[in-house]
Amino acid sequence: MTAPTPQAVALFHSVSHALRAEKIAKAAGIACRLIPVPRHLSSDCGVCLRFPLAEQSAIEQSLSNQIDYYEIFPL
Amino acid sequence: MKTIYLDNAATSYPKPSEMIEAMRIFQENIGANPGRSGHGRSIDAGRTLYETREALAKLFHIDDPLRVVLTKNSTEALNIALLGALRPGDHVITTGMEHNSVMRPLRHLESHGIELSVVSSSPQGELDPADLSKTFRKNTKMVVMTHASNVTGTIQPVAEVGRIVREKDGVMFCVDAAQTAGALPIDVEAMNIDLLAVTGHKSLFGPQGTGALFIREGLDKRIAPLMMGGTGSRSEFEMQPDFMPDKYESGTPNTPGYAGLCAGLNLIAKTSLEAIRQKEMSLTARFLDGLGQMRSHVAVFGPNNAARQTAVVSFNIQDVTPSDAALFFEEEYGILCRPGLHCAPSAHRNIGTFPQGTVRFSFGFYNTKQDVDDALTAVGRLAAR
Ligand SMILES: Cc1ncc(COP(=O)(O)O)c(C=O)c1O
Image (cartoon, rainbow over all chains, first blue to last red; front, top):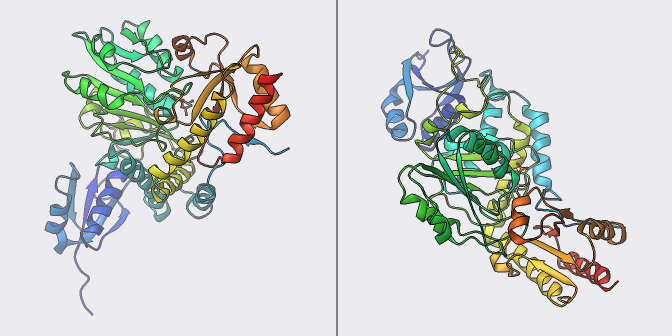
């Protein structure tokens, strides 16, 4: 059995921002998905963008200048 | 008797079946509260809103869809812009051709210590930008004007005014595009528009209860929200979010309505704004030509030139009040139009038709040449009585 791919999530100000980020990341060819924010990261009821940890720099690059605020946490 | 709907400036009818279908599909298949819960259908509801922002951004040449605040109509959008941005001691400039959705908030502000200048337009409703440029003061904070009059259809020189405002430091340019969004090209960059208010239910082919406000980057810092409450974002904080668009979007939105608006916007993109404008212009030209033949009995207000107006025509028939005329048109010909002051008493004062008002026929993309010809027959008969 192969170990699961390590994942990370990006947290945004709001769902609108998360949706924008999802569009940008998908357009850049990054496999990602919106999921509810894990409870240990925030008490907020919103969503965050999950992606393979290995894609972190690709995510950061595609979001730069497009989304002002986000935070990335490895899962 | 069939009806002929000539009241598109009030709200467009019929609506495209794609719009009605999109609302049904949202209710049946998604139906969740956007951005509140994190589950798949809540995200899909959020996506519905996002795609609507994106389609609006594309139509008006806005690069960031998150600069688009979804509102219930242009009235709400204008109220956010005017009441949120202007403070006692500020000066604001507007024109003589405004709708009450601009004039009423401004008159309210005027009674609360905001200075107001109203620049008159020509009797055809056209603003001379030179007149406007003379009214700036040191404390001028905003110029707000309609893109086209809902009374006469007169298209205003928005790009020229935008250029004048851009040269003044710290003055915001707010445009009421209720009558033009979806009917005429609008480019917030080329026209230097800082705040653009649109309504969804007219030429954008959306349902009633939808609209939007574009806020240029940086200006949200200067504009307080009118309403505060739940946004789905940052629930752990009891202070209103200070970022776009949540700052101005408290409470569960009209998501099914925006699903419909999005479908309307997609239809505009598919049909092309040029094709829509050409069709509406040719219907207007045909109607104006016909009225021209009845010159001795029918007075036409506004530019009387289809290239310089939207598909809105205001007129009066000699010795017939506008309300009597409208009743005759409906009872005898099934024509639905709007008589009176059209929520714009100041515009009627400007063109000299206050307080009796005018009869307004407003055409839309779904009207036909036959509708125009039937309308001319009806006007001709009433004028000949
Ligand atoms: C020029 C103008 N501004 C604002 C409005 C207000 O639009 P709404 O009633 O959709 O807010 C209208 C339409 O009635 C209008 O014609």
